[in-house]
Length: 571
Image 1 (cartoon, one colour):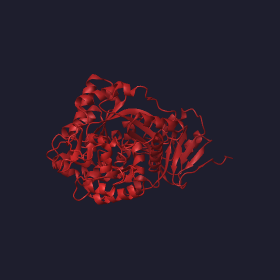
Image 2: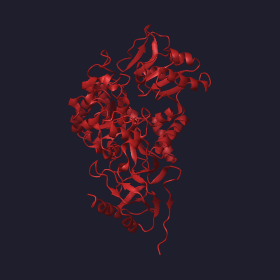
Image 3: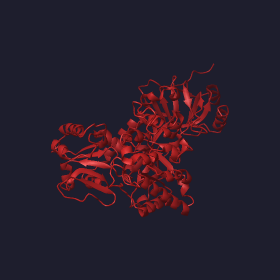
Image 4: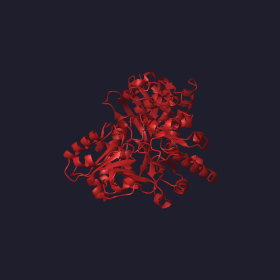
């Protein structure tokens, strides 16, 4: 295969009509991506780029003969790979998280309170304080907190703190008072889709789960359009610096999409944003009317699908399980859409040729979504072509494992969830059920059809962390040495494929993304060293030196790697 690939690439390149001065990428190691299989990553000596796309790939001499007049993009011994993509993230939420109180890694509730107290001391009384990232599973005891200590430390500020998974929040007394729920005896249940945790006296503890979060969030002043714009830009800078060239943005509203359209029109959108509209039980054709689905001229912004929620999250016991939680036999999680609502929302997506992407964590939720997809396929011959997705697919019953491949359902998963959850997930699920958790190999044998992401800002958006987790199934210190799910570990070529070709396939853009083949977008991530020559233990810290989108350098590490210059005239 290595012998005939360059010939085909050159033949295809010869058919392209030149419209601008081409750019030769050379003087480094260049991988084309997964060609033929996830394990096969062929190398070439050079790439020829034209109009933001790969025009040809092969030896430097061959490409110089194709385009005698060209510029050079000098890799200076570094390595270029197809641009890394994140198949599941939250664009604006990342920007918001970067400006809020960072609660990730808080080892105790006392540490959380202190971080919030410091922020309160720096802001005027009455200012809302928002934070994100707390996880009670890291505390001793690993129990949900009561707001009393937080309220005492922040008496003059309303405080709303999102749990790491975004499916629960902690509010202080000022925030609950503003929302009209402080000091009010309440039922724990908020319909089928939410819970309010209560103390021994029947009052809210400050912890609200899934649908109940809205009771508090409705009191938080919404950001202005200008603030939302800055959040997108702040997040974009972070993502590009990590080598990401494209993201699948899960759950945007109409105004958010309009803001991105404006950024694209102004030339300020530099990352590829593959957008999924936020959907719910009220999704209708009227809500989708007038939304543009055509890509912008630079193909940086596209609206391809709708994000729906079938259940909550495992960490807050909101994931819908077939059997009760192993560590809470009274609870089976929360269903956020009924079977009828789910079927109706999927039908609306199908009618508008938009790809449904349904959040499903628990085995009960995953089965419900698979059943809904199977039902739609029986009545709609073209539905399979939409490549319906399940986001997370975190716990799946063994009898449902083969249904993903049989139905052509995309498993969109996040390997860092496995390594973040491994200290407590076995206790949640029990020894038998954990076999169907974080089981990406069982759900999708072909990694070029498996979409990996991070779920940022739930996890770090750094794709290096995701690749490391996929290969090792271990924490940053390499523990456990055999991996939390050793039978699910991927090889490095396979893991890279899930963040390139697999992500592109999930968005139905595998004809132009995920590989550096002729006609494909010139989206490139530049690394300091050859990833296949670096010990996997170093993957988390291996530097990203540059990021190219449409052949343009959109992130460059202080000019140390890339420089453009015209070649010397030939004699």
